[in-house]
Structure formats: C-alpha cells, structure tokens
Amino acid sequence: MRLELHCHSTCSDGSQTPEQLAQALADYDAELVCLTDHDTMAGCERVARALADCERGRAARVLRGLELSCKHGKQTIHLLIWGVADGPGRDALERRLAEQRERRRERIVGICDRLASLGVTLDPEPILTASAGRTPGRPDVAKALVAARICTSVRDAFDRYLRDDGPANVDIESISLAEGLRLGREAGARMSLAHPHTLRHFAVVRELFVEFREQGLEGIEAFYGGTSLVRAEPWLRLARELDLVPTAGSDFHGEAVAELERPGIELPLAYSPRLRSWMSELPAIV
Image (cartoon, rainbow, N blue to C red; front, side):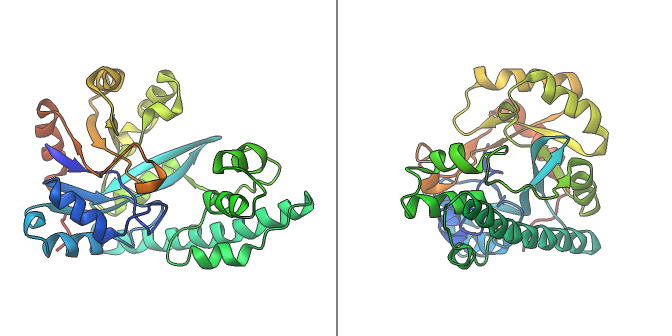
C-alpha cells in the first residue's frame, strides 16, 4: 500500500510547497495522503486541490491533519493526527494551535533577548517576517545564526545555544499529550505516535501506550522513512502486544533531509487491511 501519512511542506519546516508535494505523491501513486505540518493544517486543502487537478492523483484519498508537538513530563512527544472533521472539534483545535503559534513567535523574541545577554546580536524581526504563514521555531533561529556567521551549522547553533538546556533556549508552555489526544478525539481524528525510535528506549514507548492507549493513542509509526522490517520489528511486536495499529510515514522535509529524495512510503501488505479499516470512516477533504 503506497501512502504518505507524515510529511512537511513550506507551511512548516519543509522546503516544498503543498502543490509540489502533491505532484510528487501523484507520481508515486499514493492512495492515502495526509500533510502533517508541525502545529498547522494550513496546507491540507492545497494538497487536496492539487491532487484533484492531477490526473494521476485523483484517486488518492486526502485527509486533514498535522503533527502536533506535545509534552509529557519533560519529554517532547510528536503526535500524528489524521482525519480532522469540520465542526466544533476542529474549531477548538484551530484556536489552540493559534495560541501556540503566538507563543512560538514570542519565544523567538525571547531567544534573541537571551542571545543578546550572551553578547550575540540577532534581530528577531527578519526571522519572524521570513516565517510568515507558518510556525516559527528554533531551526529558524539556528539558520539565522548560520547566515550571520555566528555558527557554522544548524547543529552547531543547537549545540552552543538552542538545545533544550542551552543558554539561549526559552521554554514555552506546551500542549500536554493528554490535551492533544483530547483535542484530536473531539475533532473525530485518529492518532499515532510519530517516530517512536527517537524516544530511545523501548520501555518509555511502551509506558506511553499503556497510559494513553485508551485516550486515543492507538497508532504507532512502525514504518518510518527508510525503515526496514527488521528495524520495525520492536514496534510491530509492541503493536501486537497492546493492539496498536502500525502506521507508516516518510517524514519528508525536502532539502532539509537530503537522504529522502521524495515523499511517500510503502506499508507492507500484511498491515494494510488494518490501517484501511481503522481509517475507513475518517472524512476525506473534498
């Protein structure tokens, strides 16, 4: 089953427009598509329209969704939300996202103030202007530090200033995982844990599902990017144990992740019927 349930456009931190992504997914013959930009659903309708205008893309089923950044304790959890339906639930989610976007803009100013206290001058206004129409974040500051030749690379900027415990980082009040799951449920969506391997410890991932499975955390992104069946097996084993739905996504960002040449991923045939059934009642964008 060819699909894409985890990809990013210029509406967040990807390098391709929603229309460019749609064309690539049409060329790939993806049958199920959801643009999952960080903390915004702004590009979803654009993907749907572009696929509908493309002969090879008309058969694709397109969902509305996003990748929502949540916190659970000190951990950042990325929640994939698919199939957001029109109505009060979507309205509540959009309002919460708007609040977070404003906090993130304030965070950019705060980070630049902290940099100034460290003797590093960086004007936040060009960063905010360049990120108009999408969610600004620490990577935007990192790129500005590189452009100003203060740092040698984005990684250097994070290592020296912007990491979670870095001297210029500014924490913001994040949406809790429990709240994120509630918002998704009220919007009629299905939800999955993104890239579980980034949490590093199998036991940590398992505990998340033990705690939140009944709150709507039903999917696990077992197939990620170029993940093989061997690398997916721990997550498939957990899915069998806790009755989770194995999901798949490339996490395509375009130029930012050069090793992925195009969006799209193939879910092995053995796991396709369960995913189709799980998502069968979700509303497509028309």
